[in-house]
Length: 379
Image 1 (cartoon, rainbow, N blue to C red):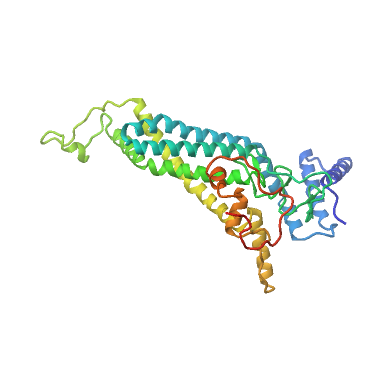
Image 2 (cartoon, rainbow, N blue to C red):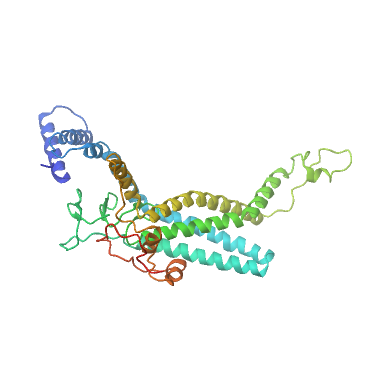
């Protein structure tokens, strides 16, 4: 017989707390008594549960940690979203206010056309996929009776779960083909918005790499300019500076130069370029690693959660001399076609290279098991 739900456990805590208060055993604060009684009942519940295993013990011990992480992530999700919007908007503002005028004044018409076209395409892809990833529901299993097969029952929702469905403690409900809960989206990544999430990560990585590579020389020039300006302030000796030593009068080695005419606007332009390059380079490396990891998972037909589960299952079957096979893998090419929703050749342009709001190819409730390796989707 499995132990009673959390609501009954909370009721028992209250009854136990009142009993302790009536007996007058101690005069500790009420909140300490509540924590003590709850932890005591939590430990005792392990001995009255016939289904107790290592997972139950682990979940019980780390329940306070899980609750804290879920609570903080739930309430700070909106802050993370605004942080993404503010940082991205600052880079776009620098690109329009600083980089575009430099491009128009120094580059050839061919390079100007390339930067304008690619930059705006990349910006549209980032904005579109981020908006869709945050606003699109990841997909939830139906709560009413349905004919779709289910493989287990959620221990927290007490509802049947279809294959590849997992419970999110932050959203407090089950998610179809759940990958993870992303605080930067303030949303779960599931069956219906997984493509938007990956395309956003890929677009943002490409955009940051583009800014980092194309702005490298501007960053070096801005950094050197600010460094020389600090050295050229009034009252600071310039002995040892090769550029200025040649301009000194004969026999004079410590000449005090006046500050060059340098406006506040020029200094802010240099600092903006440095800020843009450092931020985009950092994001390109960090987010690029995450994007590559998700690309590998997509090629294998796995989610982040399934990766750990499949790895554990593969080790268990290897001990028995058997090879584990992922039942949801259709082959690398077909996995990408199914993930991206590509059904014909033109979709590589209309659904991949251009923003597209098409739905996945299946409903997320039923999945084909052990498909053949042949190309099930025409090129």
